[in-house]
Image (cartoon, rainbow, N blue to C red; front, side, top):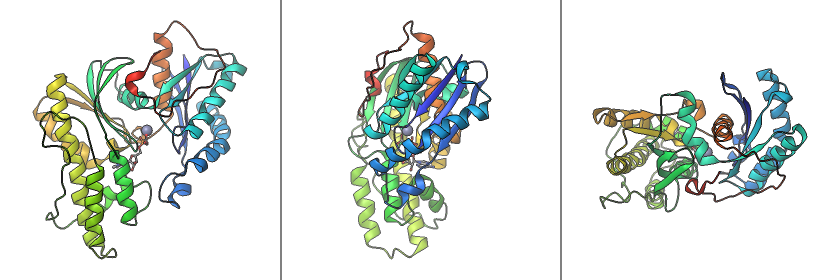
Length: 340
Ligand code: KG4
Ligand code: ZN
């Protein structure tokens, strides 16, 4: 079985083919960073216009690279939400059109489920149930993953997501978009550990939710007091900020694992590429005999392989195949509301 995966929930146009026996046979991406960097964040209208421009050439390239013929595809999986409505519509409309012309079924995939399942794509030893931390540009969520398609959100961001705060602080420090990797690189140049930022919403022992907007304001206030051209002070702030985010995520995950009692932990989404997060998490949870699984760095951020893989699991799981031509997308679709 070969599944074509199409991901256009945000700014990157992503197409992949997942082969049931060989795994990922192509995973192509057309990034829009340079376009949105000019504005300090994603401009939705520009994102959808560029998806429109990029998607057909990218699909052709994906087939060429994987040496796959169109008639070898058994199904098409596409991101139907959550995400930007204009961007989602490009992927959904094209997927439905290809499904109709090739006479193959299509499957709507939840973007966050794509992130959640990514480590399973690479490591077949990971089995349900497990606890997952999904940290991306739009979400910070802790999930109790019971079985395929059965997920409970046990912790959620009340305002800015972790990745979003990385991006905003990066802009204010003059580093550009997307900010996570840039802040991380700058933080490595710190020469003082004297700056301390709060670990928000960690006082109440039972709370699993996140609120990073107060931390963002705190850091912005601190930046307003410094000379923005002083590279060293900026590096010290980046270091303190990265630690505050990472420590908060760790405190909440420890609590979540006490509740779920799971021994397997998945960390996924764009921010899971963060080196400090990975090293601190691994050190702490190794002592507690918790197995942590991360995606490879190239699969942390948005990609088509995660959508193709989630599609393959759901195609195999459901007896009915969808050939209808109705195009629906769900900008606020929660992972806990998945129904297949
Ligand atoms: O999962 P993703 O590609 O898109 C969404 O679904 O939102 O995540 C993108 C986010 C951005 O906010 C980016 O700054 C962040 O992931 N990110 C990182 C790192 N690499 C990407 N954050 C911290 N450290 C990184 N190394
Ligand atoms: Zn994502």
